[in-house]
Image 1: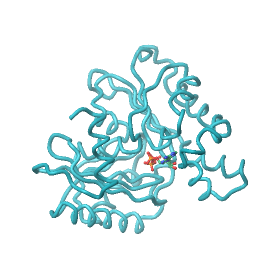
Image 2: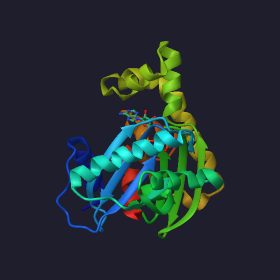
Image 3: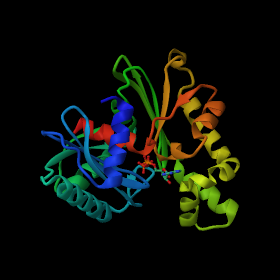
Amino acid sequence: MEAYEKIHQLHHLIETGTAADLPGPYKVGVDLGTADVVLVVTDSQGNPVAGSLCWASVVKDGLVVDFRGATTIVEQLKAEVEKIMGITLEKGATAIPPGTVGRNAQACGHIIAGAGIEPICQVDEPVAAAKALNINHGIVVDIGGGTTGIAVLKNGDLVFTADEATGGTHISLVLSGAYKITYEEAEVLKKDVSQHRRIMPVVLPVIEKMAMIVENMLAGYDEYQDYPVYVVGGTAYLTGFGEEFSKAFGRKVHVPPHPLLVTPLGIAIFG
Ligand code: ATP
């Protein structure tokens, strides 16, 4: 299966709450994000088998702020997927934003262990995204809820990563202020495709800031000028995001289908 086909398939499986009829052994990945927690199962070739997603606020700017809440959510997602597949999930991979260190870096592993999944590896989030997109040579920009992270891959090797606060949360905060609505209402407005044209001028400065962050991260690395750039993460769902980001960044970027699911799929492939 091609990378984009896998992402479409994973979206279909999550939306329908079904499992693909593929043989094991299976790999498991858990993405503990700022805005959501996603559990994905693939077969040994990285083809999606099942998945489940829960919107949650258990992580902020890459730091776990609600350990118990996160463990409970992973337990629930695990139980859901086990029911769909009719098997027990025993081990899996997690991921962290680049630059996360110390106890914060260990927290994700402890959470999935607490939920009954033995942690077998932990990868950088943009590296997981690159894996899902099957990129050997290129730049992955991961714009999630709280942070903008990048990973540069050269001949299959990770040669540079960076991560900085500013993500979809900041877009929602701007919408909340501009339209005098609560943060929760701003989240709903932001996810309503029919409103994307109307809100784009309001959120454009945040998108331009994200592009500036990436430009600054890559400043001085002229050798990466010709590398293809892929933008993943839920924020890239905004209609016109790719075009506006490309304009501000000064380079064309590619936005894969269902950008929120790219990193979770990649984490599972490492599982
Ligand atoms: P992080 O990587 O920063 O820890 P995360 O893994 O939770 O965060 P993602 O799941 O990639 O990040 O993306 C979540 C962000 O995407 C949230 O800010 C959410 O509001 C936004 N988002 C999700 N769906 C949509 C949509 N349809 N339109 C616009 N934004 C969306």
